[in-house]
Length: 302
Image (cartoon, rainbow, N blue to C red; front, side, top):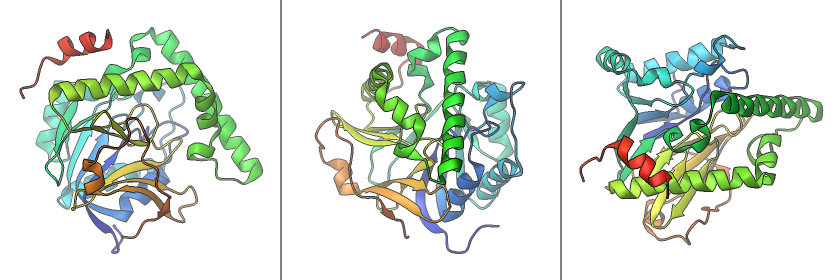
């Protein structure tokens, strides 16, 4: 059952839920889903962590409730759209996509075109197609995943010992990321390649996931929105009926919803290139499509 005081919104964007991964936070996902009444809901990849199958699968009752909640939203009239990611790339099966769409539960695709309330066109995708690390050997990718898991375990242990909320920029993972110059250049290259592709396609903005880095940026006239994740940050992007966007974070203790808000009129302005939209956190109340396989290698080579 949904809460009676949910906030009506036009669209809710989430990504990187990683259900089945030991460090996923389904309780906080449920908290977010219970706070909003969206007309549309996008899950931008890594909904289910298929990489954990056979090596540490953790599926809790809360994970099942997240799936049930999405089904209930679809049954109540919300258009649910799911994008495949690298951890659930089995969702890229054309047969599965057809079956899911016929079931009425959701629309399933590699990417979507989202028309904003103010008329802008957004490219909505996971983003792993542009990640050079995903093109390396599975051994390299597996090593990165192992290091990530160890950092998350250390973060969880330290948080319990100190009784502190080590989430978002306070987390150990985030601090390590900030200190790794190689990772910083990797994130910059990722943003550049995805935004270049979106600009080539004639979009006004990008809404994606994959890199677990919640952001609202203006990149050379293109609005960049990364929804973050539900492992480190517990963040999502909300579109209101007026066209304004919010980057929202669910507190680890479920005590409040914190937001970074960008009004629709501000979205249209030119922020200084590459500057994060910095507003104080506050309690939230209330052209034809080119061949993807031809374009991506060309852009990534530049």
